Image 1: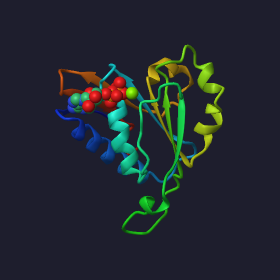
Image 2: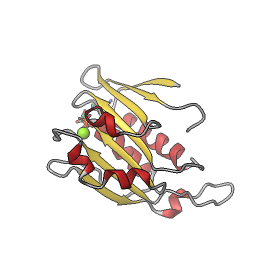
Image 3: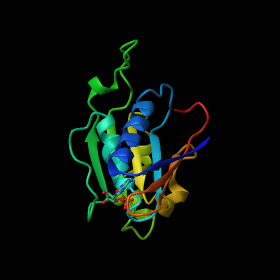
Image 4: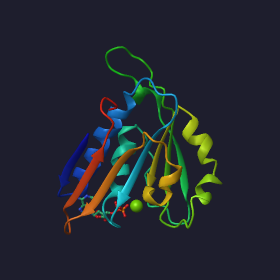
Length: 165
Ligand code: ADP
Ligand code: MG
């Protein structure tokens, strides 16, 4: 399934991120991490989207545009992960924010322990500039494409496997 969203304010992009986060927290069976690959224009709203996404996961720290840091790690508070109906604790515990803008080859990400990170079903992993490391991404990566339309307008395409979120 492919869906396109248009936003006309950074807050709308954050809100979309928050909604996607809430859906991902509800994923039950998964043997590996849930990976999100964010692609598209510089200034397209990838980091802005992830600010809302992290908020949706219940993370209080601010998501920044990493400058020289390739990867940041956040704890997902367990209270956020409870589904209202059955009080099942979501299996997700850790959120990784990776930014490949400055990397030259996928090995730089592999050297950070990427393989182990994406094996662990407790992890949610969001990768900006994911097209630069496409060959090391899992098949079921949720792909999000960000297009800069004009000063405040963005087109965001989300590709999901049916029934996934
Ligand atoms: P990227 O991580 O894709 O390079 P950022 O999220 O860092 O992009 O930057 C997006 C910039 O565009 C921010 O300065 C943000 O305030 C601005 N902006 C304006 N309109 C929007 C919108 N509709 N959605 C997201 N960001 C927007
Ligand atoms: Mg960014």
